[in-house]
Amino acid sequence: MRKAILRAAMIAATFAAGYTAHAEGITDGTVRIGVLTDMAGVFSDLGGAGAVTAAQMAIDDYVAKEKPPFKIELVSADHQNKPDIATGIARQWYDTGGVDLITDVINSGVALAVSNVAESKSRMLIVTGSGSTRLTNEQCSPYTISYTWDTYSFANGQARIVKSLGLDTWYFVAVDYALGKSLVTEASDAVTRSGGKVVGTVYHPISTTDLSSFLLQAQGSKAKVIGFANAGADLLNSIKAAKDFNITPGQAIVPLVGTITEVHALGAAATQGMFLVEPFYWNLDDLSRQWSKRFFEKFGKMPNFVSRHELSEGSAGGEDRRCGRSDEATQVDADQRHVRAQWQDPLRRQDGP
Image 1 (tube, rainbow, N blue to C red):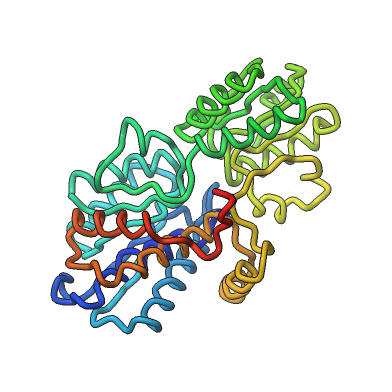
Image 2: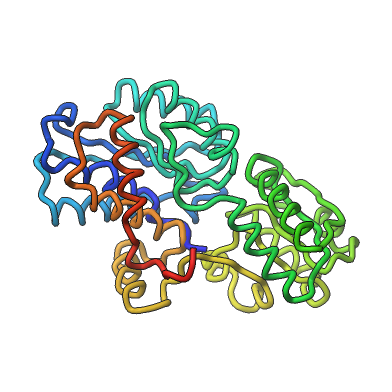
C-alpha cells in the first residue's frame, strides 16, 4: 500500500497543469489548491504535514518544467477529524478563499461530508486519503474524484492472499465510523466468496487508547485471522496491543489498511508475521528510489502509497497541458478524467494495481 504524503501533490499539478496555454481561463490568474488534512490527530502520520509537502513538490516540479503564465498557490488546514470543521473550512475556501480544488481529506467521514459541499458549490474535490466505497457508490458525485484507494480493493486483495495460505476464519476489530464499517463489509464479502467464514466483529471508538477488551474478544474467538479494520494511530495501537497479549503466535494479524509507515513506527519485532498489501514500495526499483530519495530529503521519512499517489495524480495532470480551458469545475473534471484514462504512471508496475 503506498500511502501518506504525495496525495496533495498529485492534485496540485492535476488541476494546474492543464492550463498552460489558456491562462485567460483562470480566475484572477491564480490556481489555488487546498490541502485539507489531519495535522495532529490519528491520521497525521499518513497525511498531515507530509501531504502538504507532497503537494508543494508537485507544484514546484510543474512550475519549473512548464513555466505557466499563471500563479499556483497552496493553502492547508487541519480538519481535526471533525466533519463539521472540515465542511466549514471547505465552504470558506470555495466561497471566499479563492480555492479551486480541495484534496487529501483523510478520514472517510470527513471526505463524505466535504464531497457534499463540493457538489453543492459545483467545485472540485480529489480524495487521496480516504477509501470509503460510498464515495464511488451511493454518494458518487460528478465533482469528486476518488483517486488513491478504496476499501474494496484492499479488502479483496488481503482476503484472497490470506485464504490461499489456508487461513479461512476471520474476526474483525474495526473502528466505529465510515472507514471501519466499509472495510468490514467489503472484507466479509470477500472472505465469504473465497469460501472462508467471519466468526465475529467488534467495533472500537476512533482514537481509543485502551484496546484490551476488543483484543481479548478477538483472541477468544479462536479465529485463524484477526483483521484490523482501522488505520493510523488506531492501527498502531491495535498492533501493539496484539503483541502485549501475545496473540500473534496463534493467530495471524492482517491490517486491512496497513502500510510501511506502521512497520517503520513499530519495528520488525512487533510487525513480524503480519500480512500487508501495498501498491507502492519506495525501494522497488531505480525510479521509485529516485523519487523517494527526493521526498526523504524534503520530509525526513520515506513515502508510503498515499504519498506516492499525490505525485501520481499531479503527474497525470501534467500530461494534460493541451486540454485546459478554464478553472470551471465541470471542464476540469472532464479534462482530468480524459488524461488519467490515457496516462501511465512511470512508477506503477504494469502487472500490478
